[in-house]
Length: 70
Image (tube, rainbow, N blue to C red; front, top):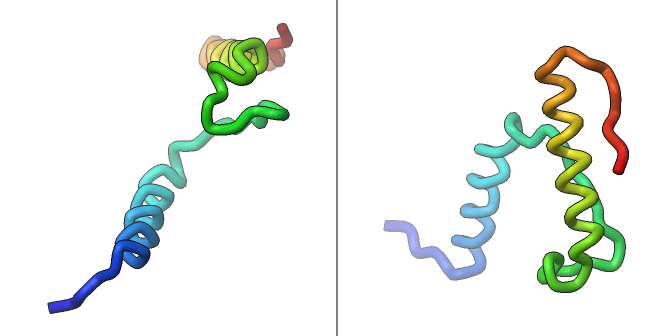
């Protein structure tokens, strides 16, 4: 039986999550000045980032090579 500490469990859980998502993450955006409460701190920045991601992926699925801009 292996004993684990909360820290070692969180490291292994993070590794599992990152490993599972590694091939599924297709876009990433940074909203400057936002923290963990992004919808409250930077709602306009979040909206722009979401729009950009969604519009870009819709364009890709439609076979277009345009990049959406808000």
